[in-house]
Length: 263
Ligand code: PTJ
Image: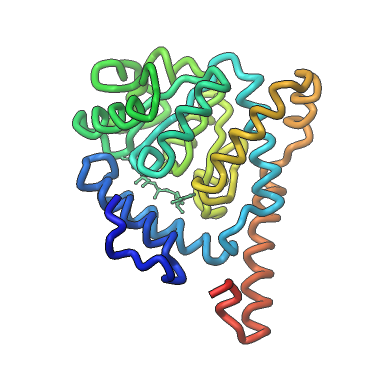
């Protein structure tokens, strides 16, 4: 990452560094051009959320951890943005939870699949599914080239973790009977609405917390994990996230203070 021109004292230095990383990753063939638009949309919602992990976000992280631990064939789906932002965390999560990593792209090209596979391997992955001819199965519920998946991966998975995902594919996976876990800062997106569990948080903050929750809950009895899932209500969690956004905007507007962050 080229940080030379990111002034350390800049009030939004962290955000600029992440933008730099995403932009460099377009040049490295990891992130699709449309990934820049997706990132900008995420940033806008994060502003409204307050750039913090919230209580509904944490509930969704705990439920996701329970689903992943109880799954027979858990798959972590990696796209360009996810690889650019959290390759190492994905590799760690796959190792501690015995989940497989699958590259699954919306804007599919072999060059990008290979670039993402290489990035994951550099981050410590032993095996990466879904690259090239390996994605030989088709999801009937999805039209277009996006239906291609790995028969050893998403095709036979019972639980799929698909952050920053497009709505059609999320809907297709849910219709196939899979449990879909996602991370999406936009609680109104079709993915957020269709998924079984939606973590409304920035993936950069959510991944270390998800890793900690998986480590913590691995020692808990399956019955307790099942209870976490049974008591989890994604619609309620989405409503809570939207209320936090609404109330935050409301209170800022009432105070007439727009920069409530420590600048
Ligand atoms: O790499 P590819 O080809 O698979 O393409 C990846 C993108 C992200 C371009 C593709 O899946 C896409 O177009 O996704 P959408 O429909 O733009 O949805 C992405 C969602 O992720 C949006 O609702 C964003 O608000 C959200 N988002 C973006 N960045 C973050 C985020 N959510 C959490 N953390 C982020 N950092």
